[in-house]
Length: 412
Image (cartoon, rainbow, N blue to C red; front, top):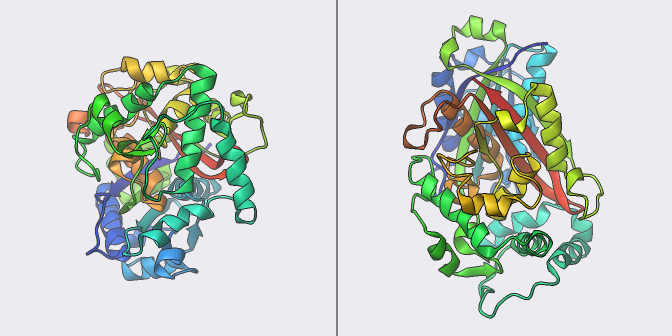
């Protein structure tokens, strides 16, 4: 079996960056990854570009990768454009791994970039309405919000400002978990407070303000039980990874001590399952597949980055990854198990709700954090002795779950 390594990886600061262009952000991420790997553009054999909003927000419906890469010095090699909703960056990374294992090249690039902050906020938020079957949008919405039936939101817990319908769906999923397992709003707020506290130590994070649980609960409501700090923001940013085979590492003269093994790279799509079948959740199945491929289990993981477009996502994914039983995510979060210094630190970067969520760059940004952790270079947010790390990144909605899920396991 061909072993694949992350030789170089980099990201920009995520956040509102109105003065910067898409290719400016992408260029910074590319140059950072090249420098980190110790190689040049001419060493690249293939490039995968992840972008979700290039067409809808910038009008570049086709060939966004070729256009962006042409402005930052990448040309002449195969370029593939990857769109898998919020899992686009992770999907580009997975395809880079596949190209190396197939032997088509020995050095591959995966890069994701987004410019989501535009003057027209309604248009910016409309991109989320495309992350499901648009021909059945109203039917989808009504089916998904029914998950929250049985819990009546308290007075004053609904925002009077417009918000994405996906937040109403996240809230319905929260309420289903609450009535099924006894999860509380305070436990969800504990996840959020922990991630914002982690983000204080992350120089790449969009938000670096600490919150207490009480402050999260008292924050402006979105829709019960979600409050504003529990939600990922609109973000601009880019991230890039350079992957190599053994031959590629030798050719570019990489520093082997800083190269991180890709122990598993898995992409799965949704299935039609029932709500009472959490063991069939696409995230759970993808995690089991990744653990088998890596020859490792949840007990071997030292640190995790998971998809928390709302804070509830971390609770769900902690269960899908096998860190706790189904229904155990809320109590574990409140105990501090997922905090730095806890039994399994999750989202030391601050997660999507703090670090930011530039869709196409998100997955590679998560992997940047895990590589940094495994290299022992995370500073005040370092997980001591980290040797194995796992990433989960979901995209879109189909049925009652994510349309696509990526799981990566990295090893020192």
